Amino acid sequence: MSQIRKIIHIDMDAFYASVEQRDNPKYRGKPLVVGGSANQRGVVSAASYEARKFGIHSAMPSKLAVAKCPHLIIVRPRFDIYQEISAQIHNIFKRYTDIFEPVALDEAYLDVTANKQNIPYASTVARLIRKEIFQETKLTASAGVSINKFLAKMASGANKPNGMTVILPEQAQEFVEKLPIEKFHGIGKVTASKMKKLGIHNGANLKELKLEFLVRHFGKAGNYYYNIARAEDNRAVQPNRIRKSIGAENSFAKDLSDETSILRELEQIALTLQKRLEKHQTSGRTITLKVKFSDYQQITRSKTVTVSFSNLNAIIGSAKALLSSIQLENRSIRLLGLSLSNLDSAKQTIQLSLFE
Image 1 (cartoon, helix red, strand yellow):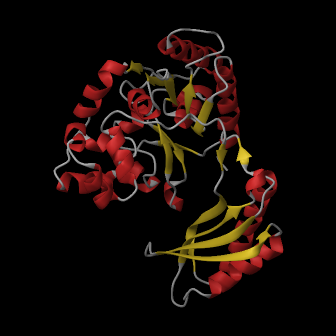
Image 2: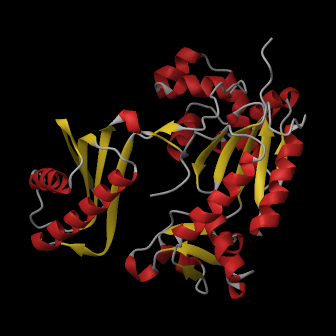
Image 3: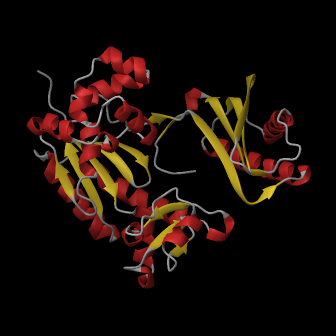
């Protein structure tokens, strides 16, 4: 019989917003978001719990957030500070295990089945980590503890903020069966809506369906849905991941309509992309251009070559060629983006801990 795994999911509470409230006492207890200006088509990156009471959430346009809460405080993000704190938190993880998988600056999975301090209970490890995070950063974290990544992720969100939930092996199936389908990690709004039309409203409904039915309706994801309905998730906690692409994009405060401005912005984005390639010591063979117009229509164009893109001139030249294949006349652009995929795999095993 295989050993039961002990997995922890650590999720910082309103991370960016909490950092800003920690560092500026006048922000504490007030509705605050980290993001772009409401006057410049900004978007909310993170919302404090006070802001969430007004229905404000990440990815919401800042203009709408201000409409919901006129006295909302908007703070520009300080990613260098968030990255420093994330590194601090990762150092705390390392006291207990080297098997941890960051999925963003503010969350990570940890495998503590065999931990460095030989602590028998994963819940004890999670409690100690949360305590040390608060002592050293003055920030709170929520934790989920269970036998696999899916259950640990679901558990960490069950008692936020500053809480901890443990799902024991014997509790796993009942927990999943009672879970509303829209709460499942890995099932977004569109998929949840489709499932409800098929009569799938909770985990119990999902478990009743055969694998063939789920694959027919949801493709490869059907296998994942079939397993999580049974509280099964065999994915390992991966300390290193293979990066599949590197990109850069810019959303403009004012739509671009003249060719000179468009090309100038495209060159700047290419420069940012090239710097990121240097940082990760890689190159790529497929370049993709993304264009979003003022009416929100989005178009992508890609080109794959035999010799990897790495120098700036090659990136700019291909980006301009891709742009020329798109009909721009009488249209204005609100976003441009460039990315490279088919990366040089030999150099791509990296520790995922930072945003670009």
